[in-house]
Length: 345
Image 1 (cartoon, rainbow, N blue to C red):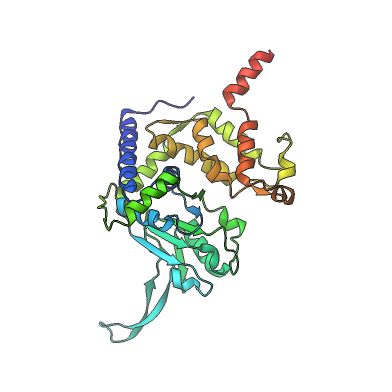
Image 2 (cartoon, rainbow, N blue to C red):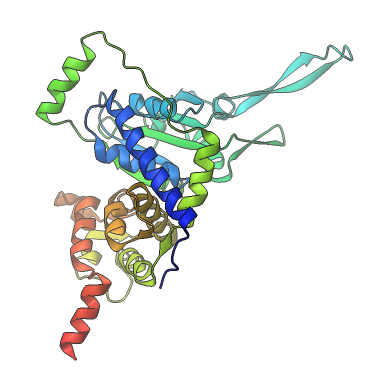
């Protein structure tokens, strides 16, 4: 059984839930709709995770990230990834400068755009693997290496990468090892008809909304620590493990459709991100315990880039999201499983 939270922790949860309401209010001044995208983005950030935003051009992915950086009072850099981008273009490089004290020349490290709290890697799949690998080191280790020296990146540090799912000519597919470093794969969908009308009205009137910062870097670091203190029951851990293990076609006892539709399933990192995402979602909604419903809500962005469909699934037009939906329907909740055992007894 999870331990009872202290009064200080309960108040901290309330404070973060209130801050989440203020953040969504500020974002809604600029971004129309996309409430689920905003929630998933903030969940990943408070879990210390990185995000991959996938959607066609013109869905305000870049605007969303820059807006979040403003209301969180974080430094923000945008990098347009291109085929000729080199690792030093994003990490930084040593340059030769005159030392005014000694009169001699020395190498000085000139920081690249990765040295920011929030980094938007626009169209990440357009750059060669060598540059992607440099970004991977920064995402995983929170530092960059140049000229044999290691330079720590500012904290908090988030990478939010965008990817265009339509045009694949001249692109470099992200390797699975790098995809796995992204906590969430967030799908940005088209707006509804009413939202699209609202977008037209808001963007053609010449009005610029004023945004007020809600949190700063130090507060975010404290809140990230608070998220990890959220209690999780053993049955929630068990459900997360069952859900992830069911994605593996060679695992005994998986649903019958999995070997036909899935070539490779999710690894242990998916379990970790399910729990962290559930904790962050719970605290954003003012709760001090994560539930199986939280696991279900974060299952799609956690698993959709970790479940590799088979050729047969692709031929039938079955996506990883559809596989995840069938898994959620197939894997019983712990309370349902317990109830079934009682009935059988």
